[in-house]
Image (cartoon, rainbow, N blue to C red; front, side):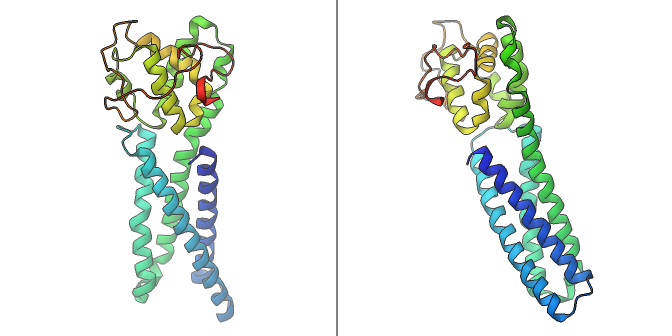
Length: 254
């Protein structure tokens, strides 16, 4: 799922949650008559269904993204844990609503807690994306000699979108510059925001982690889950070093 689609679904998820919470408060605290409560109940049910469907879609998308990603950064781990915490609370709320009428008085607390969890989950996913987007263009005016230094800073925010930097450390000296370019291009297919910072990040990887030309271990390429494999992603037209200026994009990612 693209980053834009993920953000749109996250926004709709929050809207559905907010509306479901509002109609629930109307039901339990409002002064509407029987007819008004019936309408509020219907609206609450439809909002709750939309909330549940959107949650399921976002949860599957998150699980697919973190599957095989290795260690997660602190923000990504928090985002995942908050997202998973919604599931049992939502299930308990449904069971109480359907089968335990004597406990209906505690449903508003469940609803408010679910909305707060949903808001925090979406925020911890959206804010890092906004941060990466706001810093992606800053490197374009950087002198060539400082490109790797800028790439090191960008790697702290962009590479950790999918994994911690321990996976990069584990490959130190096992890939040459072209091998890192191939790994990067595969990562950019998962996280499109990486394409805007290709040049500086590859300059950093080449400076600090690449094997000297001709010294990389035979078959030293690794797949994008950290295992040993074949680098089947195409290189770019500048030898994969990513030192081209401008947007820093290359190869098939144009």
